Image 1: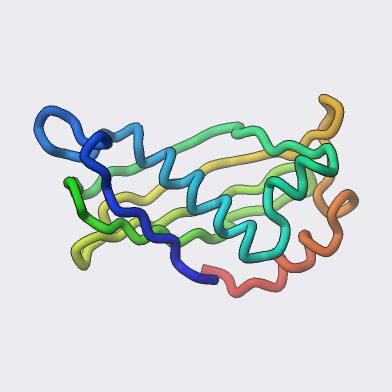
Image 2 (image 1 turned 30 degrees about the vertical axis):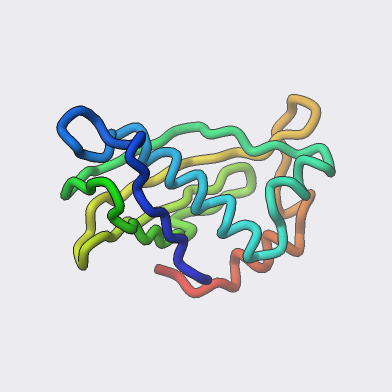
Length: 134
């Protein structure tokens, strides 16, 4: 899987010139959407088929600040997967060092009810299972 790259915009920085912490959650989402697209199962495809993937929880550990024009490389991997939930792990690097590690937990729902990814999208489930582990 290709690494996702995000160049920090001026408006994403706070008054101290540091990337505001809330933006890292957005970078995670951008990277996750790109990762799913690379697998051939973009969220647009899933939503067109009536399935949504809400966030259950998010956790970020900030290690080093980034600033305007820094390029953050976001590596995405599946940390855990069960019948109803998937946990993505993220490692974000800029300027040769890890700047943030994070996790997000998601479920899949159709018509307001949880659905098993393995049953609803068996090809996607299989593709994820056969990815190299991180």
